Image (cartoon, rainbow, N blue to C red; front, side):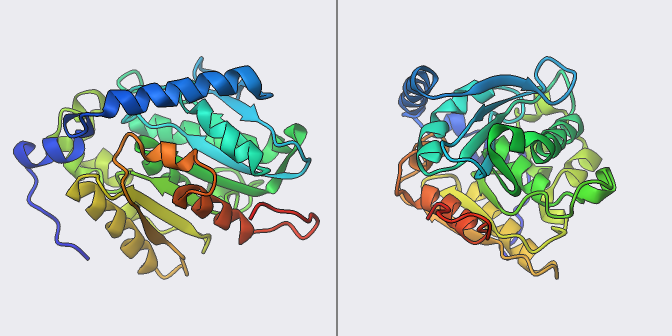
Amino acid sequence: MDATPAYSRAFCEPQYNQRLNVPDRPASMARRQELCERVRRDLRSTLDIPYGESALERLDIYPAADPDAPVMVFIHGGYWQRFDKADVAFLAEPFVRAGVTLVNVNYDLCPTVTLDRIVAQVRAACAWVWRHVADHGGDPDRIFVSGNSAGGHLTAMMMATDWPALDAALPRDVLKGGLAISGIYDLEPLRYTSINDAVGLDADAARRNSPVMMQPPTGAPVVVAVGALESPEFQRQTRALAAAWKAAGTDSSARTLVVPGCHHFNILLDLAEPGSLLMQAALDLMQENRNPRREGCPT
């Protein structure tokens, strides 16, 4: 495993504040919004379904055409303090086209709430999906999770969740696989950045919300992806999570995936491209967990 660097503000800020390092970020974000507008115009959806009581405890469902479809729960990024599920609506088009129901999740944002609260909210959203997605044409036995940046971190937190400890009615394998994209899995270095001004992590909060220090309770497959153009620390974090989970003794099949030509803000455009490396990784997760009751799972 890579050696952990000595943390300081001078080292961590440029490594983790990706807005400092990507000059074409506005162009990538503009393209994503353009694609979102097309999805909102053209695709069938059920929006702003409550899974909890707060105004942001809502999710959007973009159902596949066929019933009993596999389900991808997607968690948006923004360092837990910005953006919205509507900003990743563009992912619905490639997933629905591939026969997958997409569920985009919102959560409250820092500093209004703590990161502990956000983790609890996303867990509640995943539990809601397991209980109710059949009503929207999804298969509760084939639920997967993905997310980028903060959503990548939250994806790993979901894959490390002991679901029956939260609710005895939930199975251990609520989630059959995960695709964590451009995430942070050891949160300690964020305490040395301006990002923490809103997130407010102390040492204990950073530790208990660091997936690299957890053990996934099942052997469900996890792909930990990062753009080839992302900072060395994002690269290290990706390798560290896969290595830690492989060594955890739970038969985890965590593996890394480096996406050529991608940085922190355009990597989701790769996921949105049919036949791309990231989209194929997502569909391969689902292919490994086919429902024997149904032919024609996405390949």
